[in-house]
Length: 229
Picture 1 (cartoon, rainbow, N blue to C red):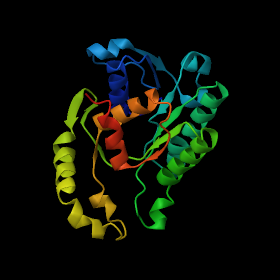
Picture 2: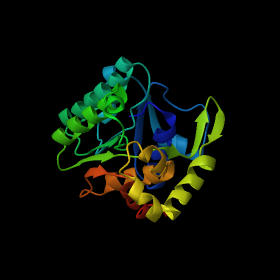
Picture 3: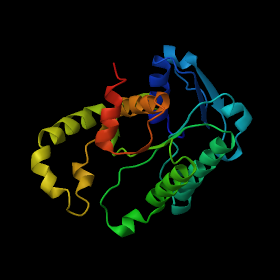
Picture 4: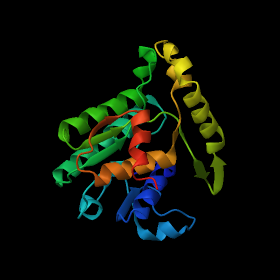
């Protein structure tokens, strides 16, 4: 279940590469461009609030949600929180054994920022997921996600920014650790995550029955290693 093409497409592509049958639900449906893996995904057009869950969830063994975004306070609560809560409950009602949520890093921001709809919505979704799926729910908490992002037919190479930053922060990690306790420090110091690492971490979560809980940035990268070959 996706709202943004960026993460959702990478997850679909990674899952297909590992022989997983994939159904994608989004408002945009099938992408306008054609890569070989695109033809191996079943693309459904719909809204999570009005979805035909019989069509979407029939035969599914796991649900992955990349729902999220910015906007007004009300929009952020709805997109990041309520939409994911609806999806979690639909999956639970249909007996789907696993649910995987793409959330957001636990930034050490001032409380007035963490109380905005984006963060409170994400945490509301996490809480619902972990209460309904205590031993099989997965929450990934990445920070900045980089990779090649397609917008209106144009490719934005976020990897040209994210990859060097990730390598630099990894190299100076021992020097920056003492700064982690400073308010809002991880806005600058939290390592970026490759969209491919996130996608393969999701694949790991899908295929491993013992994979559950909350995963930090470094744990996401570790989870990707065992399946990213």
